[in-house]
Length: 343
Image 1 (cartoon, one colour):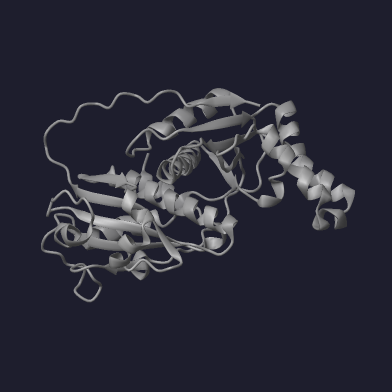
Image 2 (spheres, one colour):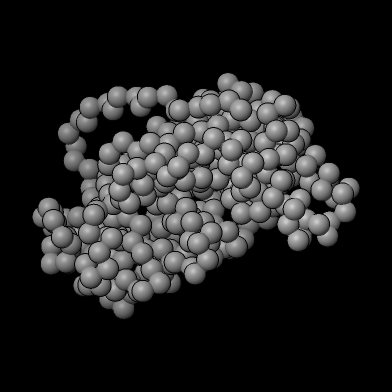
């Protein structure tokens, strides 16, 4: 796959045609999407598939239960609600993604980040095969009957539904803000000094090239809630807790804006996770490595202050980027099959 091209060409699809989606293709894409995710630890998540007419109808009925009793729903004519039900039921496949529960916040975030990243991978892999997707987290659909239908357990996090199908026409692109406008440098690598750094083997300019492709990540309302904090190994040694000295590395802290609304917070966190996943995919086409981590210290506001993290922001992940050595690397063992349940 041409990752830069696919990342920029992918669109959210809201109108699907009636062409069936082969169940084997869905499972294959899910496993491929899981293999593309690379991070520390072993994140845990699961996926439910509603692909038969009966399962799609049950799912949609559970989704509409909250809407029907809401003030807005009571104002809608019954024919319009029936239209919504039919339109969603006619979508060939619905994938429900759930991050499994964890004993601590860091692992919970790692599980949720994994789900969001795999969802993004699935959208890209599907797009490459002519499949469109709509990522749906609308609270109006999250009724008790819906949560019961998907079997959400205490402590688990619902990440969203991907409505999947083939389509006839893609919408036009909507522009993205250049990464330079979301960029803060600690030490060298600032806009004023031409993005030059003497220490890092990978220039700030090259990283910005990657980010300007990565910002084509799905995010609701194009809020673009991310910000990039750049430092080289020298600056990182002075500020990063538990820094393992590598002066040739470049580091990116990826911060997310935190809206007052909890649902928007979840959406924006997911969007930043998708952007980070884009970075990891884009780096595959370059002679670089990228290591993604969620350090424990990012949950301590005092330890985040030296990096200029604002009160309404949080750090989502730390990326270390460097140049690959030429020594052969062992082939990674294939991950276990995705935890899939059919509704």
